[in-house]
Length: 472
Ligand SMILES: [Zn+2]
Image (cartoon, rainbow, N blue to C red; front, side, top):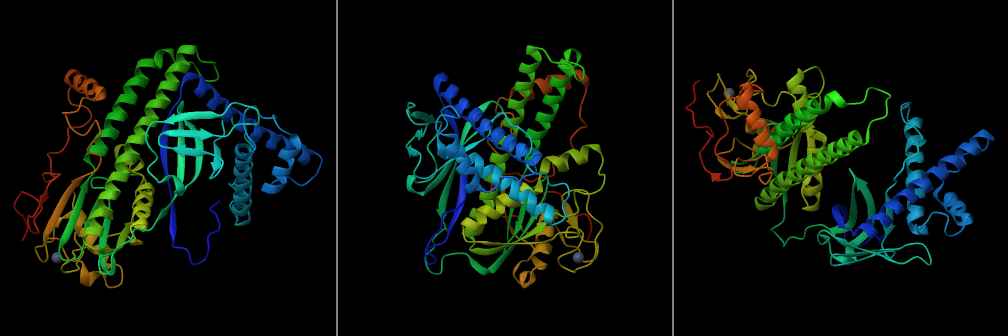
């Protein structure tokens, strides 16, 4: 829960960062034990309420009532877990219960009250109960237990006095610390901050995660090639891995061997790494857009909401792409960074934005490639930027400010990813390439590159493509 702040205090936002832990084997054992103790607290609450239910009593779900119950249990009930950490589990339970109750009241019958046991439950400590100094973290333990000090893999990206809470979590067999901090809004000098009258249209997409058309004929295109390469390599790799072990996979309902369990653990680690890489690239791409917008003093981003694009059957390969895309995550990422920079974000329906000419407003058959060309007035341009211009026009006043970009900046999302270029060694790419050499081209041969050279700022007028326009 955010703390109460005086009404006239400057506005802050809450942002969190995930930091890996560098624990010694002994420390790691203790940290895992803490998470298991969190699971014990969780199971206790479930059991308590199951008992009350069988006796016909009302469930105990209020945070304070649960805390009283915990205090009655006395110290040392949950191993090394201190009361602040144990209470965070009670808070989690209480929040989950009330969220489910609220959803059910609103008519959602699929909402479930917490009822499932979990082996590990994340633990949160609020400010004042832990300390972070440089790369050292100290978390409290139960009375008369030795303190727990762990090294962090990197410094926390927030000043220590702004950190509000730390959460110990486990993902795919690794321990992490989620650090939540109060972040002040970006401060700008008078006449230098984002100006809400300056707008930009943002088109979200699979090929180009962000295409932005701003005021003054400025445009930005962020390429998602590296992200797609990462997704494709991951898909090919996980398929090959599954094929390799298919013979010794246990049949349904059968207990797997130790070797099989190791394979499953490794798969989970690979999946988690893939998700981490995509998420990092997503943050970097959104940061690129916000930095560009701040530079151009854009105070309002009109973002096309891809509602309806995920419905319907799009075919096997395209459905996979759409699922990998995760537009909600892209929207949230852009929104959070824009908010911290003092830029307003408005979502509008993007349907039909890539099949209307921004110049003569006539319907145009949806282009199959990246090049948009209007058979009515002869306008030729980047399809995603056309979409961005149309999206901006759907907001009041946006049509007067945003025109078809003439200066286009090209940036890459996720340029550090191992799948991004052949210069970086990625074992999956080597495996995949040798596989292709044996089997012919699989999957389908990529279309000839249509994207302009990336990573450079170019000024190529309204024709971002090298081929000459065909329709006039
Ligand atoms: Zn036209």
